[in-house]
Length: 175
Image (cartoon, rainbow, N blue to C red; front, side, top):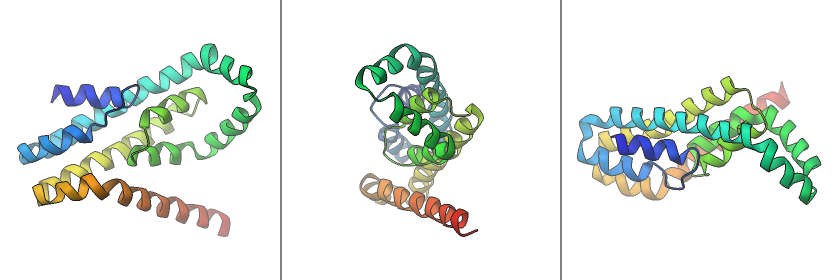
């Protein structure tokens, strides 16, 4: 389980392999540990996200800002920053659920100084939902659901997220 924790931590900050690749066989091998496996992945992923946030926060001024100015994107980044401030929680939540590389969002969140409490809360909710959903499906249905998860879970979570955000956006603009 320690290896899963390391992979989940690194995936949220610098590493390209998602922890789902380990969660699937681990839960199938020991279904009674499904909740512990999901909890380890969630905690380690959120801690790795905090590390990614720190990378964005502390390295953006020295590296990122220089590159943006050099390429003439400083003004566009300012627009992105205001958009991120308004929708940051949803961006973190959506990326935490979907196959979008979470490390990109964790680093971006630090770079734009998204409120750390909002960042951490969205990361806990998204990563927890994602990993516990995978563990629950494997715990309940076992090997037959593995193929579904591998092929379609990202699509299903992406659609659910878009419907959720669309519903809130509609309420905001209607009300």
